Amino acid sequence: MGMKYWEFEDAPLKEKLKQLNVKDVARIFFDNETEAYRFATLIYTVKRAKELRLKNVPKHIPIATAKRYLDFGVEIGMLKHENNAYLLTDRFSKPFKNMATYIKAWMENDSDEDLTVHFPTARVERQGKRGGTSASQGQQ
Image 1 (tube, rainbow, N blue to C red):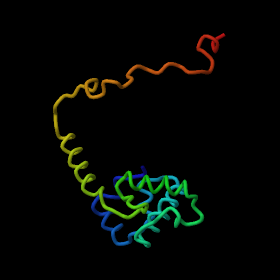
Image 2 (cartoon, rainbow, N blue to C red; image 1 turned 90 degrees about the vertical axis):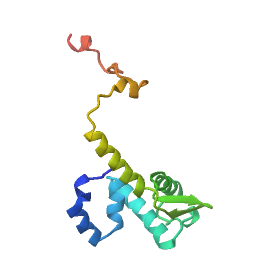
Image 3 (cartoon, rainbow, N blue to C red; image 1 turned 180 degrees about the vertical axis):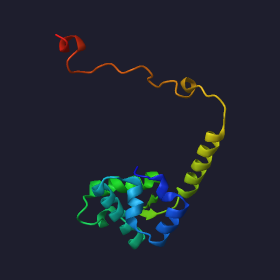
C-alpha cells in the first residue's frame, strides 16, 4: 500500500478534499503507476456507469486483469459484487476508524505481552542458507 500518513493529517487532508480525483484514491493502494492506472480506470468506470460487468470492461484492459483488480476492490470493501456486476459501496470507512481507535488504545496501554503466545506457529529461528557457495568454500 502506498498510504502516506502525512497526506491524511488534518491540514493536508483539507487541501486534498478541495480537489478530489481518482488518482489519489488509486495511489493509496498501489505505488506502481500501471497498477494504479488500471485500478483507477476500473473504479472510475464503475462510478460513471453505476455498475460494471466484465463484458463491459474498457477494451485496453484484459478481462482477467480487470477481474483481479475488481476483486481487490471487493476485498478492501470499496466495491461489492452482486448479480455478476461490480458496484461502489462503503464498507471500509467505519472499520478504518475502528482500526485507528484500536491502534491508539494499544499504543497507550502499558501491559506486557508474550509474542510466542500470540503467534505460536511462527518461525522464530533464523532461516538456513538455501544455495550459493558455502562459507568454507569461499575462504579457500
